[in-house]
Image (cartoon, rainbow, N blue to C red; front, side, top):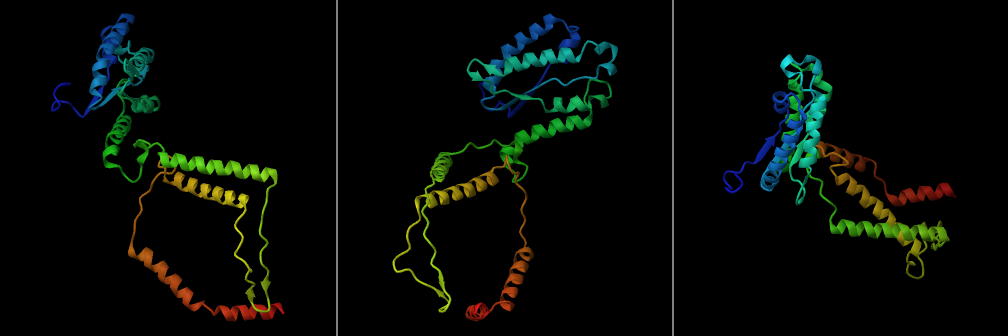
Length: 280
């Protein structure tokens, strides 16, 4: 299976413990042998995970009160011991972190719903559906890339440009805070309007450039705006939603605004003249 590319599966789902506990009556020797066997196949599973998705399903809890007599040795304590062995063996490999993924979604759901089991061992249908949905989302979302519900997609790390921009805006914020603490300020007084001519006096020379503090303040505002758009674009912060477009939702508000603009538009000179008369 590992040598022939055509024979390699796309997904491998494994899990074992209850039969070992039942056949050996929950003996400690069986647990040690389970660890030895799992360690032996862990290397091959890790190699297989280079070309396929390999999942190891953690054992679900049981309702011990409802188990039949030939299953009384399958206790939650025994299942926890086997799960701990699986976590210990499969979470690491001799090459570093193992590529085998541990599937515990059904186990988490079974902690609340195992009381609804028919025989105390097998999960109810609703819990099985939860595990199946989580598994399908993990497998299919990477291929389908839906525009909503993208919680199962891999979160892309910030790229170099985003890191440099963050450093720039953070540095601008630090300089602005320092200048503000030191009391550095340089403002240009505004030109008062000429009421008689209804126009502002034009400055004799070109407008003076912004001060150092004003420049860094503008950069800080730009950084806040960029941070807002960055967070809005992160699916792990704000979930993406389906967006729909129709001609009616676009053109009706546009026509309404244009009609209001036509009926309520006035000459700006007349407005200024009325305002000046009221002032005098």
